[in-house]
Image 1 (cartoon, rainbow, N blue to C red):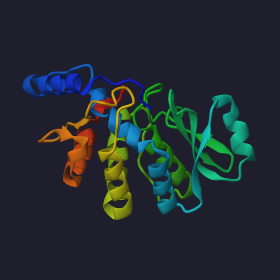
Image 2: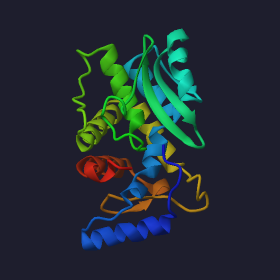
Image 3: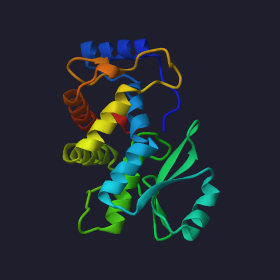
Image 4: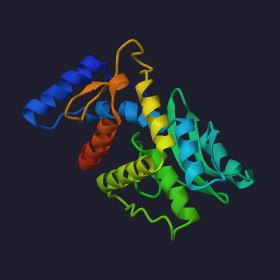
Length: 220
């Protein structure tokens, strides 16, 4: 999960530069940091897991060395976050004592902080029920896998109004940990605006554009 972010004025300036020049810039990650943060919230992940698989949970372990022992002795199944909410970490799938994650499976570039929460849910679901869930995640195809993750998220949001409402509400309430007094904006949409004014239509537009431009975010 991301820790640092630029001020929104800096992000806005870089976004405007991108629109004008249509050239590569080095801080695409600033366009998704809030999105990644909200996706990684325990409430959002739990409600997705519970809707898709009723006996699933989100658990937390502080150190990776504790992970395998935790998985082998814990009767619960679902997703495990290893790390600290304040300093970052990584999500893993946990099923019948077996731990898997997007780094070791090659679905996400190791050390990046983009969509490990969605990948962990998807890995878990297709491990539990490979017939029902086949997400076409591919080793080393990082941009493709971001597209697959966005497609999965969009399907969940379209199918479940309560999850969609919760997600939108959490986005509108989002405050940057680094810049709590600065309004966070949604970009990658036709009419950028502060998150607290974001519409559902813009959220879907944003998800589509993250999907289309997945290659830009593989190193985030």
